[in-house]
Image 1 (cartoon, rainbow, N blue to C red):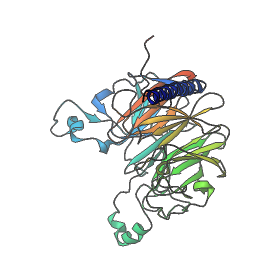
Image 2: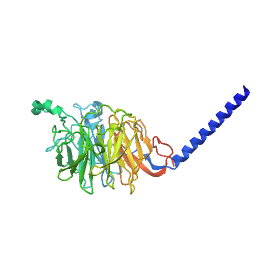
Image 3: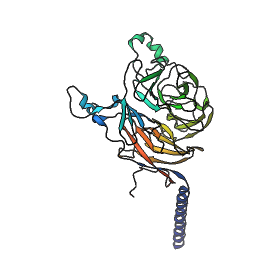
Image 4: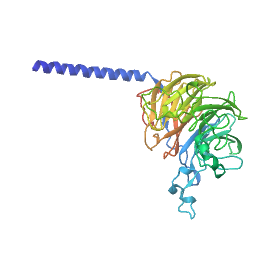
Amino acid sequence: MKRTYLIGAALAAVLAIGSVVVERKAVVEAATVQAPRFEVDPFWPKPLPNHWVIGATIGLGVDARDNVWIIHRQGSLEAKEQYATMNPKNAECCAAAPPVLAFNAAGDVIQSWGGKGEGFDWPSSNHGIDVDHKGNVWIGGNGRGSVPAALAHDESKMAAAGAVHDSFILKFTQSGKFLMQMGKPFQSKGSNDLANLRLPAKTLVDPKTNELYVADGYGNRRVIVFDADTGKYKRHWGAYGNKPDDTDLGPYKPNDPPAKQFRTPVHGVALAKDGILYVCDRTNNRIQAFKTDGTYLKETFIQKETLGDGATFDVALSKDPGEKYIYVADGSNMKVHILLRDTLEYLTSFGGGGRQPGMFYAVHSIATDSKGNIYTTETYRGQRVQKFVFKGVAPVAKRDGGVPWPVKR
């Protein structure tokens, strides 16, 4: 009995030593991996004027002067968040901010506008904002709306075709002057319609070619490209560069083979300087990379087991000369993932679910400024924009970096 006990104790000791060795090896290996490091700025932006509050914040862009643009949904605010606008006035606070807001680097509001106007259709549920190299502001939408009475006789036909109100994108100046509308409400005919969108989620303009790329979107299953000045159609494609197909794929199942088509929503796009386009196929939990002509290159999955809203909400690139890193906003798992761009290798993440600075409730959009800082917005009841200050590249301590709270120095 004593001999058996001694052998067991020795074996336990060996296993314990082995565990420590493996753990130390993992730490050493992790330390050899480098990734950008960030700290949340809990005081950015500054308090909004006029007792304004923002609702679900579903678009984000940074212009050439590092001004930060957001778009939010006034209709997502609760009644008590708008007491100051009631008749009679219920209290001093609060009022819905205009849908479009721009902040300078210091966090001051420098532009505010948006909503219905003459000569264009405002989205029933705005979604996505981008400022191109010429300073133009682009806005999409993902609202289905109600079929107007004038078209009621065609309602069943329109419903079968997937017709929705937000079948267009809008182009404005930075002061809110309307410039162009591409597409018309309730005219979408599906993922191979060349004239209309269907619930477009996000846009970007390639400064080299002046081509507009649209993640299209919540109704269609494609990327589509137009001339940014004329609106002329150029090309479009679906997952793997295939011709898009609107066949219902059914619910996402993590163990199924990768879907040959995008699921809805096709939610985000980012274009690298070397001409590689990254596309967020949100509920398939993947990012696919393409040449700008639609040629498929590669893909990666982010937290593949994620169900519901999916993991790949939006994507942005680091601002070093080679754009070495990819940042992925994950609104379901409430964090930002950091990947190597050339291999799509996963490095680390930051964030976590919560409402304190540096945490997220449904992080939705992500963008970077010229200094490498990250900005994020949050949808649903998140209702905010946050800034994460770039602190250089450092060894990765662990796969899940947690809340990037400022370090005392």
